[in-house]
Image 1 (tube, one colour):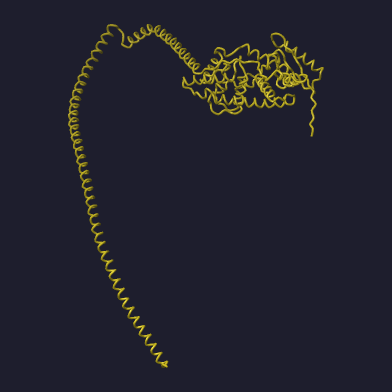
Image 2 (cartoon, helix red, strand yellow):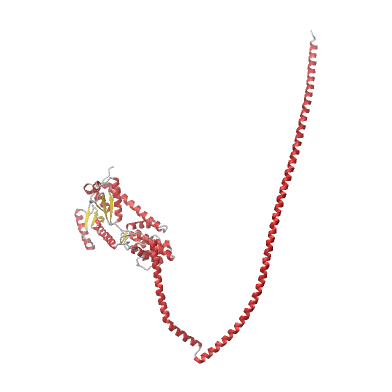
Length: 521
């Protein structure tokens, strides 16, 4: 057997020899890798140097090209500026030449002027010498004339003036008279031209007022429903509206008769609503009539706003607008007062524009000139005074107040606008077909009928119907009994006979109704 120590030593020697061999091998390998890396680095450096040289050459070429371009542009700009400077120098040279020529001409003119001034001065001196000689001659002649005539120059002048004055007095008077007549004729022509022009620029349709309205029915069976059981429906409609319903043989139609167009409009709308709805009984009739009254109130306000907008006078107080709307249902000799007022506004405005007055203010005054007619049946006094007080209360301008107060000639006009309004009022009333005197008198008679009937104690409402052939009086049942109703009818009849003039006969009907009403809860 081998010795273990020998084996250990042998193993250690083998191990050491292996390590030494490994170290030597590694050193050899490392040295080879370093050489390879060194060769690669050298190659990279050579490539980089070549690329840098190439880039350097390229940059130098580009820089040279850019410098060349800049030099070319700079040379071009310098040439342009030199050319511009040359042009400016040429212009300045031309101007200097022109100025030199002008200076020469001015010097020449100045010398001419100096010579002319010398000539003028010489002529002036010569004229002064001649004037002094003439004055001496005139004085000598005047002295000789005074010696011959044995009078002074002042006395001779007075004699001549008196003679000329006496000779020209008649001619001057005649001339003044002729000129005055000529001026009047010219003024009349101008006024006629202005009025005709204003009327031509505004054309208003001729309208006629009616006292009846027709309501069309779907069939004749509806007439029986309108009359109602024992006539209660028709009595209720007539009592609430104050309009007479005429149900005759006219097919599918009912005629509403009444002089007051507001009541007639309420009745017509109410009847049309009832016919359309189909429910016709006293309770429903009261509801519909009340609703139609509200609708007509809105209609009145809308009419007033339309008139203000149409005339174009700006802002107007709402109360005045409503009063204007009520004029839609008023007539003056058959002419609708609202349309008359609008027509007056346009005519007066055209006249104002022709003569240079304030057109808007003139239109405003003309539109409001008949404002009092909206409430003249409710307030004491003429429509002129009523309208003036209302307009003054709502702060209308003085020109408007003057136009309202003077448009009928009751007072003298203080402004041109008031004169224009009066002229437009006359033009609107005088155009063909505008007014009918008989209709106005007829309406006044109907109003008097209602006034006579309403003033008695216990009367609730009074309506003139049947075109004025009947007055229907609604009394309060708690104040007037059946016996007093007959007495009231006779009293009203006597007053009508004593106070009114009318054709034919007038029937007085006193209506007394007792209604019992309770509410189920």
